[in-house]
Image (cartoon, rainbow, N blue to C red; front, side):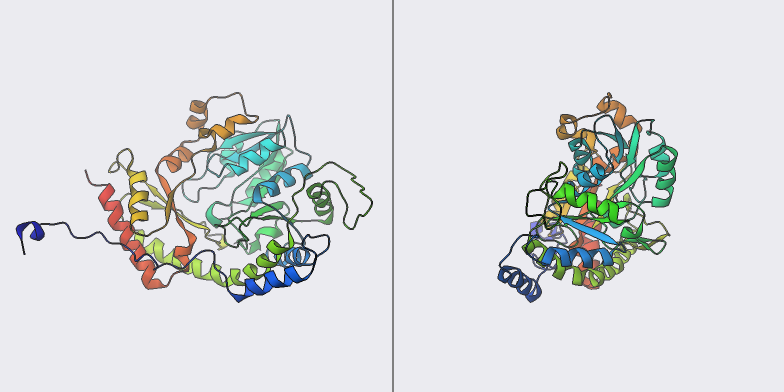
Length: 402
């Protein structure tokens, strides 16, 4: 052994390139479903049965009486707001920490998204952060169930009632989630879901809404089908609207994806608890917490935040790069929505970025120092999850060194 070999640094801990499960997951179930949709001879929902069947199955899974499948989660939110008549001159409270689709859907109706801060633990809107920004113009509160953790909907409904507003759920991360035993779709509000390629069940793209009553479902159906009633053959466009219909191939794939979701959710819950325990001793690393009232946490992502003086500027970005180099799929957190150019392209409050940052300190911290790990990590076996935690701990130590 040479001197240089003796004092060379030990190789960094890393996963093998193929050590984690693949995502998306599929098997002969999806192949059979696609062939079934193909051989119908009708590939849009008006002539086929796959989308309608998926809506019925998805509604039941989420505890809702009705569901409507659409072409994206963004369109789902916009449709829900339009069902409630929200438009120009109205304000909708949104989390400052969320993907841009939440605020974009509000702006697509002509309404104004009003960013509010989130809880430092579970990273969702709270009644207190909503009250801090709500005004006489507030018509809706739009909580995001961040990474599958349900916000406190009962508390948010009380705030909404006080302001004469409604609650619309962004449940893009939360298929099948529950709080106090109540499934996300059983809440007396419209919930909006996403089936984009990275989501917990996917057809590449797609979305859905669940409804508490037939009236809101019927209104959304008209709006999503260019104002055209079901089974219409004489062009009776009875209202304005958009074309947000889901195709039969997507519906068929999602029916199969749904059959795996409950078992995958149980696995993710177990592996997330394992990660929480393994990462608890890592100095300066904060994990997303879960309220005791959560009875099913869908765990779309595993959220981490660097917290403390040991981390200098750029530490989060360096950590993400190290994890990716070591085959742990990681990504920087969403920036606060008001720190994107797209946010300012639509209707906004008459307020500056600095003023919004001052009222949303937690979103600022999470946006600058937070990262997420792909949920496929939580479908791995326990030994692999242990290795993931070791890689994370080692990388955090590396970026935290002076």
